[in-house]
Image (cartoon, rainbow, N blue to C red; front, side):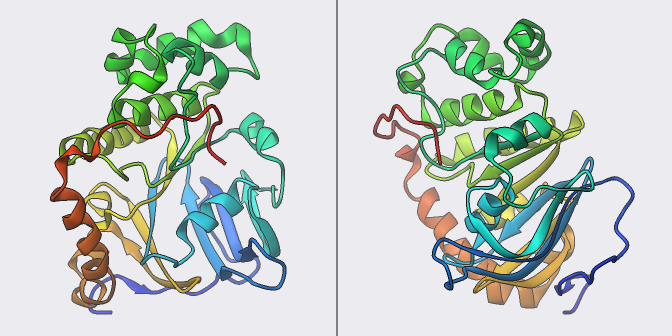
Length: 280
């Protein structure tokens, strides 16, 4: 690679990581069907105050990696560690209790519940702390403050994404995992969501984000990992990846096509079909 970006390889066991590492994925192989791995020997890490992105073409395994971290996909090899503790395959509710938040791409709110009740669902582990937690978060989500009594299904796509993030933040996670937060949103709503993600990170919450809109997301990321066909391909700082001609030609060019398609349909920030179930 022509800049600081470099071909990514799996970290060997015992490899030294920054002292504030909150998440370490080491040599993970995972998939939905036994014997048919989507990810093969993938590694990454996230520092305690970092914003780290996962990028790659469709089918590269990005969302699968996020779900493997959150215990939603079976890991057949490798380990996932959070705060130094092995959490490989731990159930999602246990991970929430440990300090890991997750926002899926679709079906990430309860549309028939009000905004307030959705937020209460986010504090189910410590319901008595609801008022204090929402008071701490309200400044980040002024639009939700105005719509506390509205049903989540009546919100725009951008507002629903804000609600999904707010709900995931109610237990005060140390790490927030986001799966395609800009998908289906208008360009203006995408700008608002990326700005919100930056502010969440600035409050001290580490963020791991899967995103197709690579150029805009890399602009706010400390570091990025590009996956290709289920393998680590390239890693570097956000600026290194954006400035590397080879990365742009091989990866960001393909991802940019999807971004341009979204930009040509600014009305996509509309209602999705309602669902009573949160995301998988």
